[in-house]
Amino acid sequence: MSSPISQSTRQAPLAPQRPVAQAQPNKAMCRVGSDRLDLGRSLPPSLIEADLRLSMIGGPQLAADGQVTIQKAFVERLLRHALGGSPDIKDARIGFEAATGSYSVEAKIAIKGIQVPLSIKFAPMVDQNQVSFQLREVAIPTRFGTLEANLITRKVTEAIAHEMSVNGYRNSTDAKRGIVRLDVNGLLGQLGVLPSFASLDLDKTRLSASVSPTGNVVVGMASTQHAPEIPGTSASDIALFADGQGLQQALRGALGPDYEVQKITLDHGSLKLDGQAEFKEGSDFLTGAKGLLLLLAVAARSPAANQISPTPERMMVPLSLDIKQDGTQFVITPSIGKALESLTDSLKKAGFTPVPDGKGVRIDLNEVWKDNCAIFDQVGVQPEGAAAKLRLDLDSFFDTPWLKKNSDA
Image (cartoon, rainbow, N blue to C red; front, side):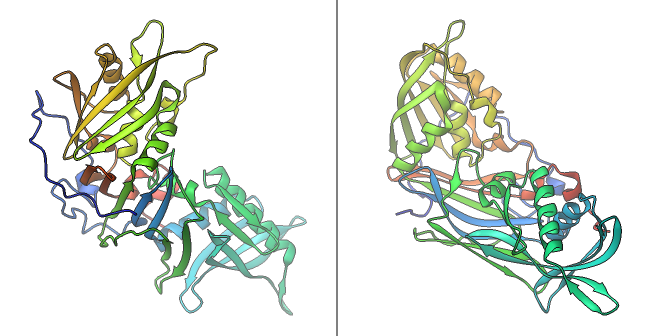
């Protein structure tokens, strides 16, 4: 059973030889700051806000409790871009009807080379435990009234699904019913809520969807695992708890072939990894430190760095990593001194600034977020598991111009 983030007695501070460089997001545009105050109160609401508790119990898959709020502006821009990408749909105008909780579209569609008017209503829903949109009241106005068109429903459904796929939003469809289901894991991963090597267990997490009177789509998540509530703020709050078994299995996937985790030992403010590292000719021991640290940071910023081509013969050498935690800082000491250089290089490639500390190196987890607006409020390691809580402005993760634009005109 998961538990609140550890508030265990802090260990004596481990003084680094020089200060660790801190991430420097554009605070003028962030909704979070190092003083834990909301610095962006004058900014418009986040396009996406997530207040979630993620629990990794007994395995690498996550159960979730909380909610993700998708602003009306996000939905409108997504629909406008998806419809605008279809060569058969022109002049789409999108609105929201509070009375029905649905989005309306007025457009022109090409049928056998002839442009005819088209009206559609989109309703957010959950289908097969996936966040979905359903086309309802698809009609072609005529002088005799409106003509419902099953063929048009299928055509528009497939067009929207295709454009979403092109833009990286994995989905599936039920074209006959006019349903486009967004892949929840793909969506959360693309938005920065989930690391690339973790996934939401939809057998343990039930989804719900509702639409507010202002047009915001609220996706609820509820699991059978105990998870304390996270107070809502103007920024997103993501908390992660992993027990020993879940953490060990997740690390096996995250660290890749370079470092094989055989055992993990958790204690107050420390953890130890026992395993085997591959020895490569022309280099020292290459460890999977990046994957480990990004797991603790609840994000894998560069999954490709963990993908190494297998070779016919591999020389594996026993290697342990002792990790001491103090706040958001960690001191990592390899059991083999020759591995320290490769460990340092791995950390630098992952975006950290390793600082020598005794026989190991010190890093700060907040360096993971140099290019985004996010900070860790709490990090804790205890015998029953590891926990982290961070606040982030998910809008800073978007790199899609049409989604970030300030005008919806």
